[in-house]
Length: 87
Length: 203
Image 1 (cartoon, each protein chain N blue to C red):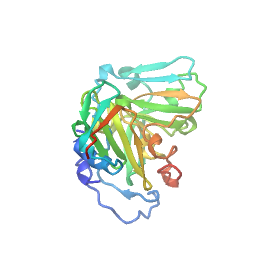
Image 2 (cartoon, chains in turn yellow, purple):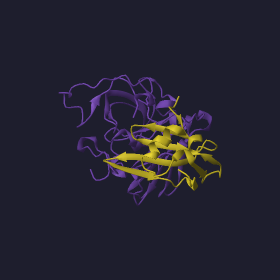
Image 3 (cartoon, each protein chain N blue to C red):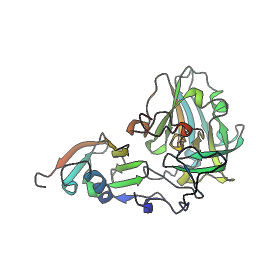
């Protein structure tokens, strides 16, 4: 069985790179159009990186790797990122 | 990264450098077989499985499971090396050489993109998957390859870091221009030679 976590685990990882409160962020999937809080996504985290997938269709929303002191982030799976104005 | 993210197969302890010279730089010997997955484990039924060679070929070629199993098979024993620094020595696999598969198509290409169920991909120079360097394997340690380790079949390219040995492989796309795959486009080295410690971009 694969090791998967809820998006709260991903929130912690993403919080390192984003300057706003990730618990207030909602993402619209570029695959199926479903909008969910980042905490409502599914995260796969292991030694190579983190992959956050849409809970509705498994489309990859976010790919993230930490390599040699830099973060590599691919957000192409997110059509729209909605960020609360209050942080 | 918490060790809770790894499967229970991850039981290894770091050991002193192997003096036999079989461990590449920065690697440690692992007794288990860690599972690293970027998504849900596919469970493709054998009746629905096929393997294709497409792209810069005169005619695409496809084998269903029975046809694949009827191809000339090889048993190989190889050391494998993960970029997360674990290595396993003398792993036993059975499957079909890419020499056998590619001999059945007419092609003109320089690179292959291996593609898998679940959307994973990885890229390799064609010259590095020929001449006894790569296989599509369906048996590990004498047993059918389990889904968590890439079954029904995975690519095996043991001379490179193991992310190049794509799990749940469904085919090869032959191309003229290289295309970085899933990890190669996210900071990981385009080539991945463990003996040169080619882990990341710029290595």
